[in-house]
Length: 398
Ligand code: NAD
View 1: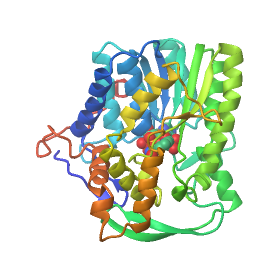
View 2: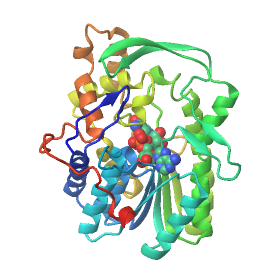
View 3: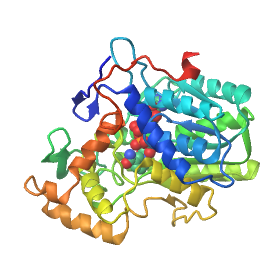
């Protein structure tokens, strides 16, 4: 099949198997160029491992620390007629590279919120891996079915305090428009916490603990975002921010529990705003990211998911210098939040319009990153050549 990008709003409905493999390889090469992470993890479970921050966490674990990995995700395989999702091809490429390097790399495709996936993960850990010394929880999901009650919860991206109007980038057309975001009801806030808060992370850690598959000194980390005040109404003070607060409460509880039983630790890491499938769906954020990229690239500070996670693992989690903030969070968003970067963004935000977007924002960089998420626009990939859409992760197609 010859595969070209087909963009529909903030999603691309095709993805390129060879392009995704090249994107994964780029990340592997970067991690290898950084050398081995001393005392890094050896048996890692990544929940949400197929794209974005979770994929990078899996790559840094394997290629920076020589870890066996179990990755869990919710993706669609391809067929002779249509391509699978990018995360499916990323996972196929990752598994191949990791097993070629002599590492165990197993994957599970299914609903992380279910009891079934937790039981399957435990089985794989018992049969194929050693006790888990790192659990990365990196899910971004719009819904969750409660595994006990069967209730179907949907998350929303709304404010928690009245209507909010701001500039927004139509990423399809490259045009700035105005967006109005409504306030959530209490039920919508509660449902978003159910989906994107810490409840399922805690269920995972409890299931692994009860099954006896956690190692002494185990660490667990989940990812959050804060950003500047201009995005607070939709993010930090919005429904998603409430869910992220819940993650911090759960992390505190896990830290105590793991500390007592395993000498273990739990953290929330606040990461940089980046183009991923999850972030491109949030109003206001893509325009902010485009301006952020412009400023960070100009100052030589730009990072993607892989650079962020490399720094998180090598300098913070396993580097002996966590640099926790007042709420006990790891701040790998430190360069994004630097005063010089944020004051430049605030200035651009006030004046940006369709007349000067090319000057004040890196829309081309945004688009390029977006296409790359689906394996397009990558040097060395022949997009006019036939590619196999049925490529699959070996441990799933076994
Ligand atoms: P992403 O969309 O790239 O990845 C989401 C992952 O979750 C994928 O592997 C997907 O398959 C998996 N997933 C979704 N629903 C699932 C389900 N029901 N069962 C199993 N797997 C499921 O997202 P991302 O941007 O990498 O986000 C990961 C985490 O990082 C989120 O918690 C997000 O809030 C946080 N974060 C993101 C940013 C950003 O700018 N992108 C910044 C800071 C923090």
